[in-house]
Structure formats: structure tokens, C-alpha cells
Length: 108
Image (cartoon, rainbow, N blue to C red; front, side, top):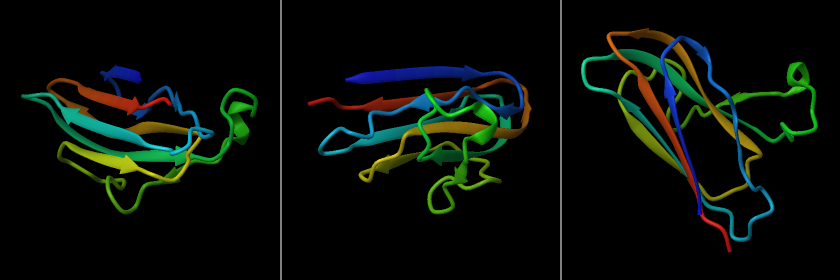
């Protein structure tokens, strides 16, 4: 299993987390935790572009409008069952602490 835990301390787009889009079946879970004492506004984004080979400026990010859209102010999680190449957390406001961005993807 691939596990990633990023601690986000500033606003902006966090470092993307690459996913194995060839996994069959594809399953990935994303969790965003606003640590106690912090106030944050964020959204989760995904891409179908290969972040390992596509120039950074050419990667097309899409907001996850259904689960954790831009403007989210509470902790939450998403379970993906259709392939995505990468995910990231885009933080627009953060005070009083940090955010934990966690990604888990099972492997066969």
C-alpha cells in the first residue's frame, strides 16, 4: 500500500501526489485534516496528466466539485474508484496551524 502524509503550512497548491492509474481495480482515498486550532479554506484537485512526464505548466488540474470543492472549511475525505494520475490540496486560506493531506492507494 502506498501511503503519503503531507503537512501543509502555507497557502497555495501543495506538491502533487502521483497515483498508480494502471492499478486494477483502481482505489485511492484522500483525507484532509484541519489540525485542531487551525482555520483553513481549501479544495482537492486531480489531474489525468502524467505529472512525471508532463511539464508542470501544462498539467491541467480539475477541482473535485463533488466531495471537497474549493471553499471547503472542514476536514473530509474522498474515495476514488476511477483512475486519476495525481491529486493535490490547494489551500486558499490558513491560520493558526496546519493541514494534513493524506493519500492511501492499495496495490495488487
